[in-house]
Image (cartoon, rainbow, N blue to C red; front, side, top):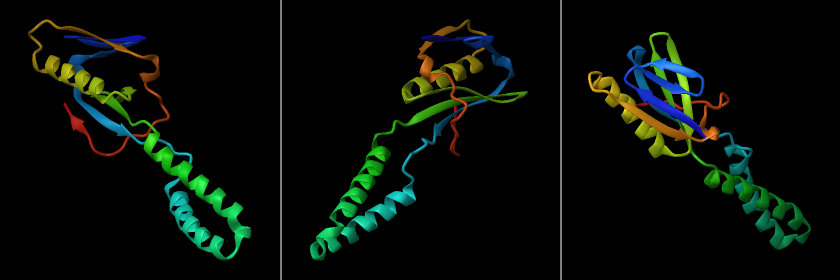
Amino acid sequence: MSKLNITNNTITLDNKVYQVRNITSVGKYRIKPKYFFKLKFIIVGVVLSLLGIEWMKNNPDVSLFTWSIIILTALGIIERFTKAKRYGITIETNAGSTKLLTSKDESLINRIINTITEIMNNQDKPANYTFNVSDGDIINQSGSFENGVQVG
C-alpha cells in the first residue's frame, strides 16, 4: 500500500511531490482497456459462427471448424464484458500534464478529485488528507486516455 497525502501546499505520492498552487486543473479519464480479441474479430466470428451452424446442418464435416470459431468468438465477447474498467487522474500544472494514478475504483478517483478541488478552493483552511492507494493503482505508463474529461 502506498499513501497519497494531500495538504494545502502539496500532493505527495511515493517520491513525487506536486505543489497545489501550481495546479491549473484536475481531470478524470476512462482508460481504454487493451483487448486480446479485437472487435472486428468478434464481428467476423459471429458471422462465421452463424454460417457454420447452417453449414453443419448439411455437412457435419465442418463441425470442428464451426465449434472452434464459436468458442473463440465467445471468449472474445466474455473478455469485453469481464475486463475491468480503469479510471485515471491527471493533474495539469504550469509545467504541463502529469498522470497521477489509475484505479478500478471510480469512487476513489472521485473522492481524490473532490478533495483536491476543495483544497484549491479553500487555501486559507488547514487541510491534511491521506488516501491508501494499492501499489497496483500507481500509474501504469502503458495506458491511453480517452477523450472526455470531468474537471473537478
